[in-house]
Image (cartoon, rainbow, N blue to C red; front, side, top):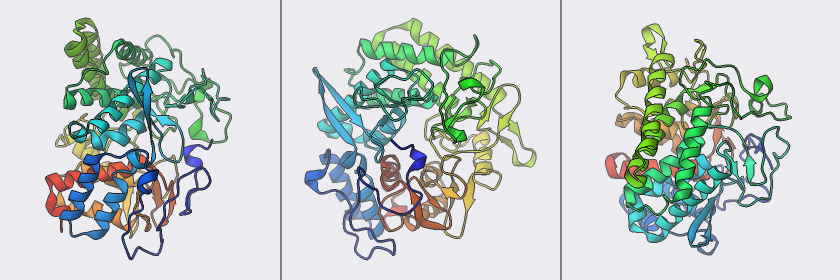
Length: 473
């Protein structure tokens, strides 16, 4: 099995075992015919999602945008969903696209744009309930793992020097993996009112999440997790015999890997700690509202308070005339990494994750900093500008960052600017990609990456509902 980074950095279509899309021309598309799989080949169909696509196509005069939305918004459902039942419980396994494994992060993000629609489509609601059940089962297997197999078939990464199990695809400890699982279950409950996912297994999983967060505060040493890999890729390995660089135990949570699946330099990954504060408060609300467990709720809220306080003390950098900026990573000793990475959670995405008000000055100062040459992973050309990251390398912009820039802006000119870049850089495919070279959008990675496709759909549909003048012209 290939690592995400190993997929072709070219405009070539997916190879054997991966999905290919018809009607693609890198020279441009003259007729915007659908690039979706045929109806009989689709993994799942939602009537409400189809209605949304029809509604948008009927209301916008922008035929290219309508075509892109029609391709991208249903891409998770069309191509990545495997749903059935285990006993009497729905069970949903969602692959990322061209890698046939399920990431807790990606699977949540892939269905997130459909969440507002679940009360209008019982099948869609059941699908997401099944994903919550599957994620709960995954956490019970190993709360330190980021990616899981459908069964116990093992994976290419069995040789990793960590506590691998046959159910795991990969075992990279990333705070956000657990946060995304909480985000999905909490918001499913809030939108639907359905509490059927919150059984004793879910309660046990919440206990494991809290325990893992506490272990990775590293107040009593490194804790039970280490990771090493026999590889020449720096980003896939971990220093100090798999423990990561040292941290001062100040209340923050160590994340040995980023949401890109690259290893951290300084283990206190700041965007993920902000995300953890949100998740801890959501678990407290679940515990109070569903389980009536006041003690567990108190423990969650106390830890959220501790992490939040530590962020305000240790995750700030005075950059003079540029203002006070939030670092990407810190270690509690005063060392800090002043970048942002396109993967979510990122510093740019904090308001999207309900982790910070976008009007806060520290966020606005940080946003200005990371969307400029001050961020070594901000790339710009005559074609596009945006954030990339070490995962792919220099000069590759991630559409995810352009989408997130639009999502976190109220400036209609900036949003339209982002939307125009996305239209200029899909390389004639009608789909988003993991990344593209700043000087050549046809030089891209991952022709089948469902997360960013549905994220694009989420942006367009939100604009249609909240700022229709931007997408209807």
